[in-house]
Length: 537
Image (cartoon, rainbow, N blue to C red; front, side, top):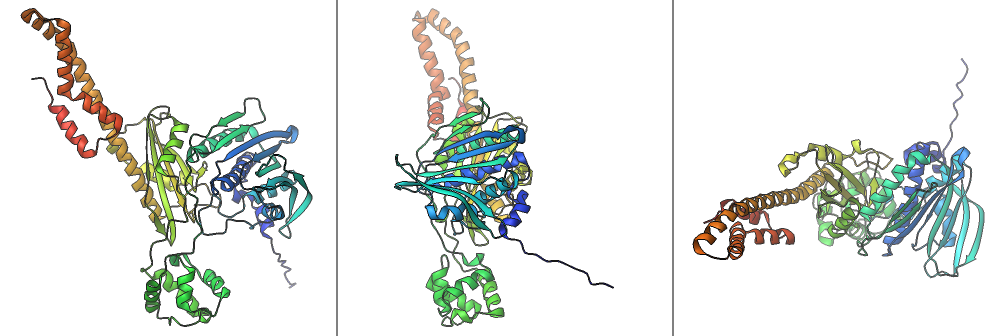
């Protein structure tokens, strides 16, 4: 028998993602247009809001060659810009990013812009053009970049430096890709609207290839959430490789000092308690943790229940007021209720869940709640059926909250974390993690209870107004009879009668409380019993 000739080869990261571009959301020409715009807009938002700059983002899509469905996509922001010597690596080297830090980021792999470049090369073989000016820079750097896929290195096609006459700062990117604009248009516009819902402090100017493809989304608030801080790993989130990397920095450091200096929330007393639990000498050099000792050490770290909860400083939630502004500006509801839950954690990763309910007004009527999902301020548009949010919303008995379908009800859920548990590499659905599922359910129920109170108040208001109308109608006969018997001016009697009716029904207090939103559940029950008992003497 002859020998079997088996050939082996290695793939660079760039080659892997070029071959498997659907993993990053570039599955077809329509999805690729949406994904390209999404990746570039996300980078723009990170380059602005992280540094407390109110985002102003311009997006333009145009036909470069309509016969081949080649589209030019242009995105410009007013962010902090990119240093000139970093531009080639930022856009031409896969897994080179500023996002490999422990804090909240929109991206998860630091892949976004590089995947755009790879897709452009694979479909049009044209380089990405990048112009960028850092803050207070006298010059604008311009590069045309491609990726050497075999080596995962940038290829600089052209570069030049321009005078920054007008003090502009930010980054402008143009890329030519193959795309299906008619099919992508609705998704792109929906993505921008949803992004403005979660970032109402940003303004967007969008132009498409057709005359009617024009969208201006103004800024509705200048209030911005606090940017996240950079953090340390939590002891429950570690693995063997992470510990090995930390040990290599200083293998002679004592284990006690190693724990205190390298991990979130580990003080001296907690470190001593853990080392007693793990049976490790505090004075042992950390470099002696090898092989089985190292694996056992990591196992003990993940099993130990004496660690503090992860800090939430690494996160940047929207906040109830800003979220309410965004929901109102996009959905124009009759009323909106919001909540930002307290920080929680899963597997040592901190997370915060925020939720909003929009009711009535311009919210479309539907047979079930309309859902708007967000992860680290990024709208999730695809794969709703696989998302834990959809599961939770469908499981809730909405009749408990006085909602009868079809109804004008929208549910907004935002999850921010240092590590979002996506259900797939496409980053469009949140996985079913018990801790996160519980927090989402509690958040939705909390805003749903607020909605129930509002609907109850509205029903009581309508009931009181109906009583007022009935009593007023029959009071006319009483007024006429009293006027005849007492020879009193009927207008004076009529005014007195209406004041008596309003006072007995407590209309003034109910209406004032409704306007000011000061009724509590307890107060509402009291108010309800008073209203039901109210009648004319």
